[in-house]
Amino acid sequence: MFAAIVMGAVLSTFNSVLNSAATIFSIDVFKRHFGKNCSDRKLVKVGKLTSLILAIFAILVAPMVANAPDGLYQLLQQLNGIFFIPIASIMLAGFFLKNISAMGAKVALFVGLTFYILTTFIFKVDIHFVHIWGIEFVLNLIVMFAVSYFYPPTQEMQQDNIVFVEMKTWKYTKPMAIMLCVVTVAIYILLGNAS
Image (cartoon, rainbow, N blue to C red; front, top):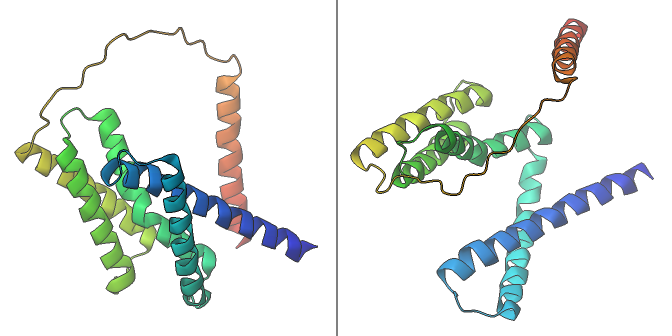
């Protein structure tokens, strides 16, 4: 029964990733850049073909994942870092910094991806990948600032028809936040002493 539950969870996750990837490719990439006037039937065919290619690729890569030296979970965390840190740095810069241009964000995405793949999977760097995440984040910000200095934004962002909504805090926000912090620190201390 446990094996059936695990298999169901794995297949469910695999199917959802395939569907998401196929949808993103067919609508955001194929329709936008290659077939602006294509029909829904053709988009469905492109999505099915994308799912098939990704499924075959996953089947071919699976034996390599089985030989991961630090285990599957550690490998997945390393793979998440390929896109997580560059995208997170671009999103945070977009939210909080006004002078970052689209060109700066694109170059930082490329530089971040290349830097992380080279330092984690190709060259033997004696630094834990979480520290590489931090270095990559700072590197992405530096690249964004440098490129945006030479290629500044062409137009300023304007917000029209702003409607302000009155925000009232939940009366238990502070006690719950304090309790959450205390529980987190307690778990950290207890688990740290257990090892």
